[in-house]
Each structure stands twice: as C-alpha cells, then as structure tokens.
Image 1 (cartoon, one colour):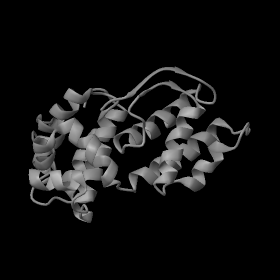
Image 2 (cartoon, helix red, strand yellow):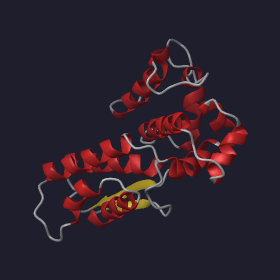
Image 3 (cartoon, one colour):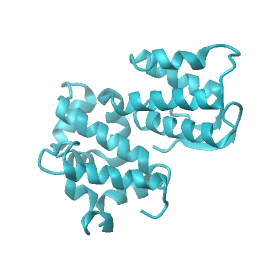
Length: 208
C-alpha cells in the first residue's frame, strides 16, 4: 500500500510547516485511494494538484482546493498549510468506501479485514465488487480503519501496520487494538476512540 516515499521537495513545500501539512494530507489521500498507484517521490505543487483534482471528481474539496490551482499565485506557506489542513479535515469526515475497499483489502486481505470490520468475508467480497452498496455503519468502520492506517503509515511498513492491530499495547491496558473492534463496533465508542488516539500518538512519537 505504502506509495509515499518522498526523496525531494520543491517550493512551496520546502519549509517544515508546509512539508508536514502536505505529507499529512497526502497520507490521508493515499489510504482513501486518491493518490496514484505509481507512488510519490517528488513533492511539488503538481503532485498535490493531482490529488486535489481526484478529490474534486469525487465531489470533495473543490472549493478550498481551488486556491492551490491559481497559476503563479503568491500564496504564503501559512495559507498553503491552512488549505491542506482544511482538505485533510474534509477527507477525515468523508467515507469513500468504493475507494477504500480496494486499498484496505490489498493491505489486510479479505479474512483479516472482515474480522476488523466485524462482518463476514462474503460481505467484504460483495462490497468490494460493488454487488451491494456498503451500509453506512460498515462504511464508517472502514473509514475509521483507513484513518488509523494513515496515522500508522509514517512509522510502519505494511507488515508492521498489520501486526500493530494484533499486538498488545500498554496504552490499551495490555489489550490489542483488534480486541476493541468487535461486536458491531462504532467508531464513536470509547474503545475504538482509544485505538485511534493511540495510533495518532505515533505522529508525535516513534515508540507507541
């Protein structure tokens, strides 16, 4: 899954603030299927615009994204960070199951993904093929997993992400994250929220 491997950056992403904003935004876009499978090694305005265009085609973020499409516009680093933050918030709030199913199935496999979502493997296959519309409750869980994976992707490779869900964590009272994702769980329940908080803590610390 992991396709963000930035080797070089170009203006306006050559400051700590803008590069952090861009990488955070692009990480969300990657796990939601808005980043091309060819990967990303060079971070520039063209790469970010491609993602914004893909979002706009899906009906997301066309308004705020337009600011980064103005040719030769003089946009400050703080303005760029603000726009990318708004676009990231839009992704956080916008489940996109038709895009997220292939990404997460490729990462976890059908059987493991079904367990994490508390549904049957047969249901995963139906939703993945588009034979049946994804129910809102399942789409919410799928999107939650997508965001957790995004949080983890800066610290772990694909194998490490899969393993993270099954290993006991001191921050979860000695339980594994997957133990909080059972019995028709809801992302807003306390258990899943603890899992998300633990994953997000990795953004500031490599040792979670």
